[in-house]
Image (cartoon, rainbow, N blue to C red; front, side, top):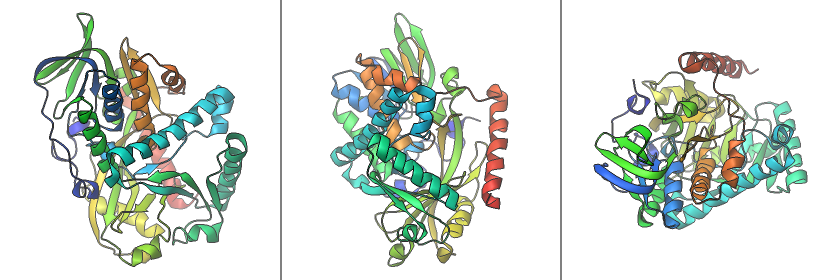
Amino acid sequence: MRLLYANGTRGEHTGSWYAASAEAPGPYPALKGEVTADVTVVGGGFTGLSAALHLARAGAKVVLVEAQRVGWGASGRNGGQVAPGLNMHQDALEAKLGRQAAEGYWRIGLEAVALVRKQVEELAPEADWQPGVLHSFWHEGEAREAAGYAEFLRREYGHDTLEVLDTPGVRGFVASEAYRGGVVDWTAGHIHPLAYAFGLARGAAAAGAALHEMSEVHRVAPEGGKLLVATDRGRVLADHVILGCNGYMEGLAPKVQARVMPINNYVVATEPLGARAAQVMPKNVAVADSKFVINYFRLSGDGRLIFGGGESYGYKFPADIAAKVRKPLEQVFPQLEGVRITHGWGGTLGITVKRVPAFMRVAPGVMAAGGYSGHGVALASKAGEIMARAVGGDAADFDLMARLPAPPFPGGPLLRTPITTAAMMWYAMRDRLGV
């Protein structure tokens, strides 16, 4: 079973609240026949669309091919959180790669957030940037550790937009007794991610990029001094190829696929809560908590609770996503027991062993980035811009990101999924036991 077609109807966006509340561009025609380009971009999510936008604005002839619809994958299904930094803390990056490199990653993380905010304002104001991401903690020890890290970032990196909260303080943001403290990052924010992806697509097309949907790539190979990208009904010959497929890399680049593993996560939208919205979320920030199988949530513009949580393994989504996500939702917000859920959807993201992105030169002229491990709104947008600059000759940030540790998953193609699944199930069990 191909992951691209394991869930949903081919060529249709998932039945999410995002898809129901955003106007899709296009449709863009499928690629037919042979065309030439300076750069072929494979994948119509944040990575590919950002790359196409920046390349086209720099004057390159760009062809983007997407197997489904633009914004169809994780880019249009996620929690909409836009936060700086990587999943690996700055002190750990310093210990592994040195202070200078760590400072570079911090700069890139801040630039990624600023880039998303700028592009939302310019291309997708309907994506509705809202400031603030709160990291909330189930245990007091976690909260103390996070407060210490916040002080480290303030002292060593000058990051003074963090607000440390005790237990009463966090309840001023989230009306739940689950949490024992938190840290709000006011540099971060949250958006309607699919509206943002659609804005990037419109912007790239307006800049001159040729976008093609329903054009699955089967082969990338050198041909006659160029790079061939072949689909069912078309071919592109280009000087450069950018692979922005993230968790959907099946068969295109084995070295990347070995390092970026697809996993599924699930999201629901409740009915509009009306006056209850302020009683659930007194302040309009996005929240990500400290569970290994993370809960993340925020309010939509029309007062719904958008809540992500729950886990499953294998390609297929569960039959009743709403029932799966309702359990953690009601654990955090027991006052919403029985609330009507209007939309439930799944998404496939890419993770790496170390939970930091994998940037790679796959072959001469071929670059790839993925495995954003839950930080994809900001990092994928920035990755596209970084690879566009690398095509133009400025590869310093690409080379820096390529230094991040991205080993293959253990077990090879046949065993990596069961090995990783067993590990994730162990940590999920610890979540449920409150360990």
